[in-house]
Length: 62
Image (cartoon, rainbow, N blue to C red):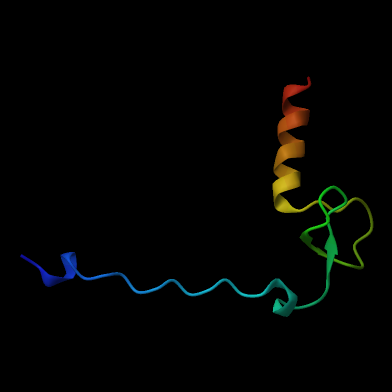
């Protein structure tokens, strides 16, 4: 039997702090969380979760 089977897994690395992730990002117009868009982006900015929820609403409305 392999000894790796009973070994405890290594602790996961912590997620990077979004404030250190690069340029300032625009906040979501619905939930105010950071988006994937820079602050200079023109138009409505949604975070990935709100984009997905909006896509679900528009897909079911037609």
